[in-house]
Amino acid sequence: MNHKQTLTLWLLLTITPSAQSQTKQAIDSLQRLFASTKADTTKNIILIEIAKQYYRNKPDTTLLLTKQAASWAEENKFVRGQARAYNVMGLSCLVKGNYNEALGLFQKSIPLFTIAHDRQGLGFAHNNIGLLYYYQGDSLALGYFQKAVDIHTNIQDDEGTALALNNIGLVYEGKGDFQLALAQYQKALALYKKVEIKLGIGQSYTNLGFIYMQLKDYIRSLENLESGVRIQGEINDQTTLVSSYMGLAEVYKRLKQKPKSIEYAARALELSLQIQSAYDAMEASGFLYRAYKDQHRTDEALRYFELNKKLSDSIFSVEKTKAIASLETRVELEKKEIEVEVLKGEKRIQTIATVVALGILIAASTFTYFLFRNRRKLQQQSEMLETSNKVKDKIFSIVSHDLRSPLNALKGMFSLLEKGDMNAQEFQQFIPDLNKRLTHAADITEELLLWSRNQLNRIELNPVEVKPYQLFKKEADRFKQNAYEKGINIIIEADESIKTKVDVDTMQTVIRNLVSNAVKFCKKGDTITLVSKEDSNTIKLAVKDTGTGIKPEDLSKIFDSRGFTTHGTAGEAGTGLGLMLCKEFVEKNGGKIDVESNWGKGTSFSITLPAL
Image 1 (cartoon, rainbow, N blue to C red):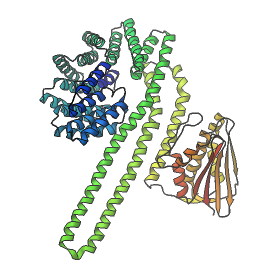
Image 2 (cartoon, rainbow, N blue to C red):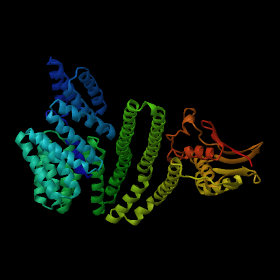
Image 3 (tube, rainbow, N blue to C red):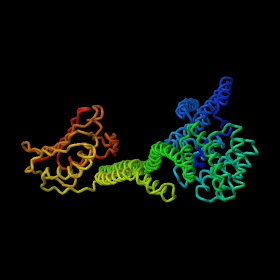
Image 4 (cartoon, rainbow, N blue to C red):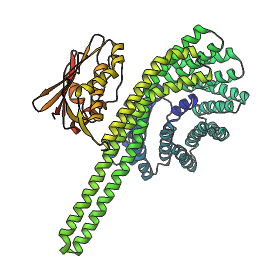
């Protein structure tokens, strides 16, 4: 999603055209109306309108107020109030990035709007679902926007129609269908002018300015963007104003008018920092970096490059959360489909049971067996599907959280090189950091594949005689360089004659994870000791360190099936899968793993295995 699309989309999120302003004046007006109104149902609707004023900047306030409104509406069977409360509640969840919860609330409001004959609310519910899918890059967005247009057009709601048309324009613009996008924006502008909604008029001018820029009609682009700036200044629409400034900066750049281009980009940056819009500030600072770099003004270019990188890093953490939320939405929908299928299967069996019991009493015992067998089969299928979905949930989370980061970083660097925005010397400075990230990603991939195979019971053990010393030696050599860089000593205190019988691959993974963890949580001057000894009928292995240790309240979480991880002494990240794997693999080999830790002083993982 580009700069202009992001800004416009947030502004177009709404439920009703009557209260788009978030100003204190609007809230005060609604509160006075609430106090003077006697009808309870009207008070309920006004409370929802007040809640909606806060959803962009204070979504938690919106959630609190709409929950109160929904509760009252449910108790008093006020269906229209329920529907509108759920819809506004969904908007606050959407702003917070809780896509799955937002989708559920929007879908919950649709049948209620239908029952209440609230066609306008129904149209906005479809529009909001379209926005949710649009954020996730889902092609379903266009269908929901078109449905919203149809509903609003049918009831002659011009503002609602214009809102949905603008969103359809965004979809076409994102696809590169600029002529189709232009037609939608022009229709929206005409409708906004008809009902004299300045906010919509200003946004439509900005949309048209960007489209004409894509069509290389720079004169019309400037005319529309300047019209947008004029109206946005009048109504203090600062967010869209930033977008208009950036549009003007880009047009003047293409017209080779560099001073004006830099002037508008600087205005955009100043305003975006003032309203604390990190996305806009990142866009503007990047633009200014490239502009000053082209003019060989090194000091200014470096200043804006550093600001851009700082903003980019802060935004990336937000994007990871959104990506996970997006994946969770899809997984949750699949889970619901599975649950429905299981329930259908049980219902079919219950129906068969009733018919047979009434018709053939003699076969009751045979049928009982049949019923039990099939119900058990359905239960097993349900358990397998649940396990599979847990695996998928974890994989999606890790892929979006841990693997995207190094790949996106590498992609971004190569993109800068390809565009000429970064030279080879500048790129060289980032190579050590990129190498660490990619190495980490490779380790995660290997760990992830092992864990998912184990969860699906696709790992077959092949126990053979092996010396624990050999397992220790291999991992000590593997982490020798990492330990050296952090100033950590690795010592092996293992009897080379001791043997045990285990699956080498899985036990090697266990030792690797334990040593990796020890290196992760040790600092300069710390020691890692690898110990093996024979004790009656068991073999004792241990990986001890003098590192940071584990907090007492976290000890019970480290082998948890949900995964638990914290950052290491050098900021190293993890997936939370390593120790889960250790526990599962040790137990598969007939052993047991325990942990002892003293916070601030060190940790000891001990493994007990059968002796030969």
